[in-house]
Length: 89
Length: 205
Image 1: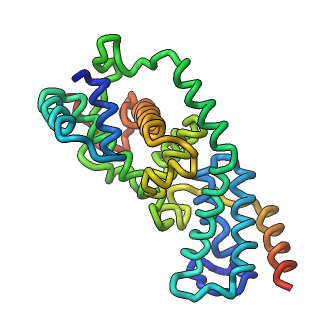
Image 2: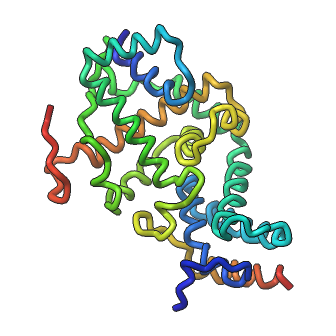
């Protein structure tokens, strides 16, 4: 199997189960190919990093704005406060 | 300034200061357009107010609000998903192959070693700026698919329903999203020359 084909399977393996022959083909290819081995680890890294910043159920990494500091403008904030006050009456 | 960071009150007048920025960041990571993100946060507050009576206090106010926001984002993704997806997939077919592989389907842009663990980037604000910019650079439907799959950890079946695509199409979209993100991270962070003084130097292999 070519590297391009293996790359596609390595991605798909993160989304659905692969058949035994395909898993075997990947394993054999990976023992021989340092680049595809690196790709496999990079994909894992991307997944881990995404979960960290996405929270995958929580907002942990971006909660306090330490690593991603986008914030609402003060205009937007006062508009929302006004709206909430109106609706709350 | 009052510190609201640990606020867990059901008084809606405290919500904007206590949770507004965190909700905004949560939305902005997923929808890219700042105005849309703002609107979604606003809608979240209004829905929360309407559903206040139903809140049982089993979770924190923040978690409750994030849950509402998640639904708003998914509803937003559902809107004109079909058009966006089909235009991105058509563009993909017409796209001349990128330079990741050569014509023998071997690596041209061979992956570099990113190191054992990404621990050294976790606290690095600069890295996350690059990461977010790379995410934003993905075609709209690929970004939606990636966000639902990797940021939110949804199952592919659910994502297919939201985006109105077949499983096979979704796998292709995710494969392309990961590939583009990988190239972008490698170009803008992991394979920088000269090496950043902050980071451990990586040994070429």
